[in-house]
Image 1 (spheres, rainbow, N blue to C red):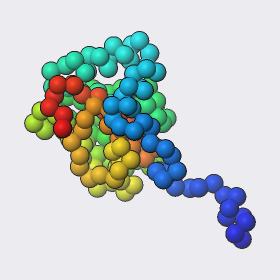
Image 2 (cartoon, rainbow, N blue to C red):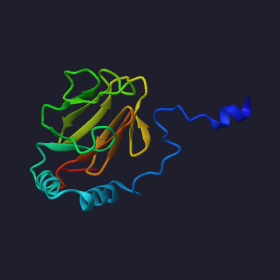
Image 3 (cartoon, rainbow, N blue to C red):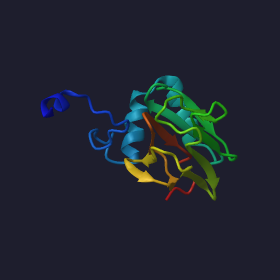
Length: 155
């Protein structure tokens, strides 16, 4: 029986302990992403970085919708498997109303909405976290990269 179990594929949807963190810091992650981006993506990234901080961007850099990008406005965004979500992630590893990103002060804050599988920022389980440029948000099988203004009071 143990031999049969050893041959099975791991069924966890998150595999957090098995994958290496992509880069050692948020700034390394954004630099790596930028270096691999298309000219159009670089233009969008530059625009977000040089903005006044009113808006931010989310890029899906790993997962089924890799390359998708979403504008985060001062009104915020919802993230989930529900079709009405601002950022629709269609996979069973994502709760219908999984999380949100809201404008708080001079930046943006990520909030998990009590999802079943939880949310991770930079490979750490979080319920709420102030985001900085280069933060990697993992929701189920999706890895999202947060890009905000570099002068927006990130701490």
